[in-house]
Length: 406
Ligand SMILES: [Zn+2]
Image (cartoon, rainbow, N blue to C red):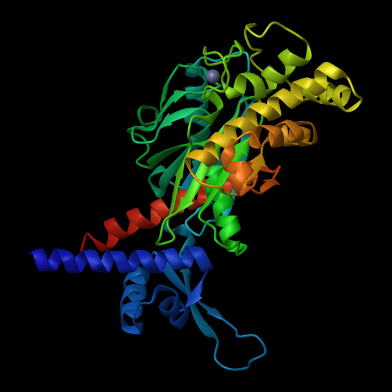
């Protein structure tokens, strides 16, 4: 029995290697799979045959360029082997997307959220209805959706798929598993949004061949402040976390934060913090629930025209962010930082304070500042993160369910 189960385990691990290499490189010929995975040719044949029989993989013929010879056979995921749904919850809207097992996006729609209403019940009803709509529109059965991957800003408990605290609903929790059971059998993944951004940035940088890449951080600027840290282990696997950066104590400056504490990074650097400083409102004033971009644009315009308090507000935001990032690199290591989110449109105003804050730490003075890039299109990064994480999860589950059941 023991021997049999360990053989089974090796077989599953090898199948996982094959699927992972197809995720990384796209559809591949037999010899290329063997090359990328390091598995013997006969092992690869056994796995592709098995996965083809299980309708996980399919073979396609590819006409080799400039050759009149026989077409090459390549293996790729069978797109209909399963589906995944991604849900991105943000303060003003909820975006729903459907993708197939090959990672191709097949449907997407957005629903506006009533920003004045922070109770979870109307959201929960709209959420369940939207998922039904997504399946009905594409004429797929609910049982074919294998993963529902949800993201939000704030604190999440991935193990129980519970949203613990979010800028959208405050401390009112959302239990996604309870919402979807028993009608949906899909596995539920709940992630902090900036964690997904960090995940996607790490993959992009790895693909671009950035040298000595050990870790990548993503900092999201907007009404709230998010941070994700993606680290590669020795085997090249990614582990990604989202420390509670926005609500990390930065300074005992008495600035009231949306979370109820004082002196959080967000209380200075979130949109409402910038607005409060620019208008010289007392720092313990209850934060605005939502600041429209048009309002922020006006403050930025005034700052660029030399209005002192507006300029100062952005600079203070940058300073809090820079000090926070200096603590991050002191605790971890120096790593490239990608800055994203709607707040990137004011990066020209934030930059000076940010560099000043970073430069106050010994780590940065000795080793230099981490390289910073601005990547404004946050939504694309969030989706890339969703897809990669959900598809790996599907690969894993498909292998254990289909090849393990024999
Ligand atoms: Zn806070």
